[in-house]
Image 1: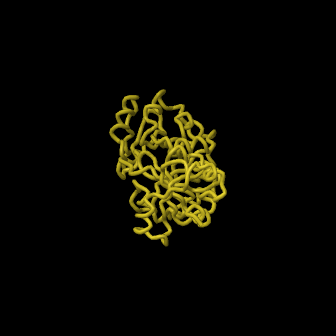
Image 2 (image 1 turned 30 degrees about the horizontal axis):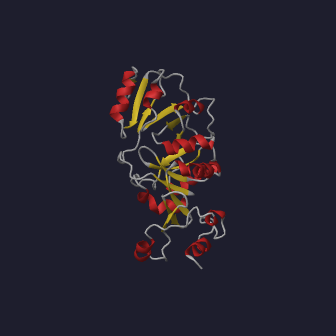
Image 3 (image 1 turned 60 degrees about the vertical axis):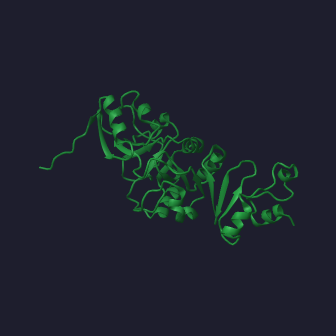
Length: 283
């Protein structure tokens, strides 16, 4: 029995069968990443193995029932199907790694809360694929023309009123009439959001209260709870996360969290003549 045959039997559903047309056509023999070195160093008994894909020189990590794949266009459809199946995935953004699911699936949203150990009273933000999609979920007609396109895509979360025409389920963040909206400057998550036909609920990929994740290893203990984890490498913006700004009041802004882009965000807001909302003093 050759190596390809043994592997196909050990990893059904992931590797093609020995009789697969892929192998008969000679498209690619299964090639293992430094197999001699890794088999000695890691041992075949470990659950984690580095496997070359059949048609791309990209590394996939098999860890229990969870697959870690590169956050590339080649895997976007896989992520879209997981979202449509009401599963939770982990994805890179332009700031931190996050857990994402269909924001209109109560089961999937509850699953994120369970994974993080997060209080149900703590609201989740959402992610849309393009700036034009924001009006599907929130009220934007009070904002200066061009402001949204100047801020987004980028490391900013905008807090806006949902409005009566929002497509969001009322079960998402119940009792809260505002929503935090993101359009990250990260093509992978935007492509997944577009392809899902919905919008994504998005929150940081960590246990509630733990430090935020800038690489997939930071939350390795939570991989098993995701359908897939998509690796975009080390994210360079640090652990401050996105800048959160409240734009619910006409002509005003309020910085809720400085995040990683406060100064650039404030400069844009003031360019459009928005004024900082002052805290009311207690009498």
